[in-house]
Image (cartoon, rainbow, N blue to C red; front, side):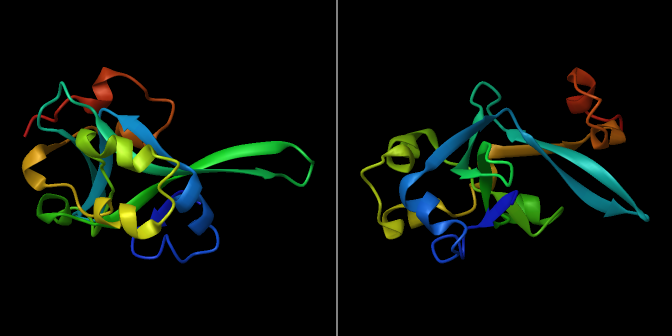
Length: 153
């Protein structure tokens, strides 16, 4: 599963143990979201307003055994309701953990979900910026600076 909803992550059997014992941070310079425009989807690049400070997305990791007996390690991103800036594009957004909260999120001694619940809220819109980018980001073969170059509007 790619995403875990912050509202139910503590209760879902697929995520509740990981929320207690296997939290991680997923570093990112930014992420994409798409907006429907005239029957097509326009991608937007969302990034920290202060580009010197990368985002850290709230993640959960798990290990399990596949049908063939091979151990698989996987992770999921925790999502929450969108802040006002992102709501123009989508109703959900990744939970972004502020640097001041890294230690709490990563502390293996903190196993009560209520202790980390306050971190599962929308990131302040003032710390974020967004702009439209090329639709080439829809193809995983495209990976480079052109994927985050602002479109001329």
